[in-house]
Length: 212
Image (cartoon, rainbow, N blue to C red; front, side):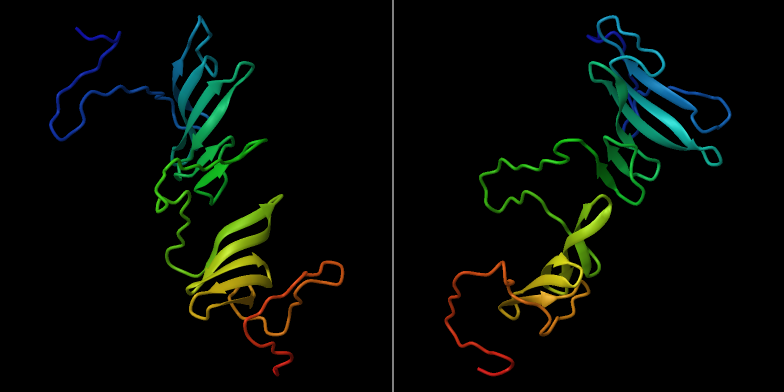
């Protein structure tokens, strides 16, 4: 006596058990779709209406490549909220961004990452560039990169274009490099005439123009 109105059951060891198929057998064309709709409070839950929907839709007629779209009713409009593209890219608040594995779009806070762990070893965010030096995090405005956090060998770099502050454990120093990781010798000022530093505290000597 199942508690649910519909139960699909099949006992299969180490394989697929019960399953439900929702099929649109029409010849492949862009826009062909099949969906599972959810309706509450006597809502209209056919087509792209209702309270929520999970829909598969063809985006390429030649090979039937398909996206999976999750939609909800927000109280005034029904629309897609999450799209998983056929490539595996995921868009939240958008239909996906090419060459971006996860794209999040919002008119307020885009992403809030929070850890409630009391263990200091539990990171709030890990960004891991695996196989090469380069930019780990790009900071953009209106689609154009204005700054970055990157890695060159074992050195962390933060900055923009040819003005990158490098932090080196090997040298026990921080200094200026360009984006490619090349040191910029004698190229940058510390402060400017109308944006000066206040006090300078040193435990060693001062070297001016190679002497000191």
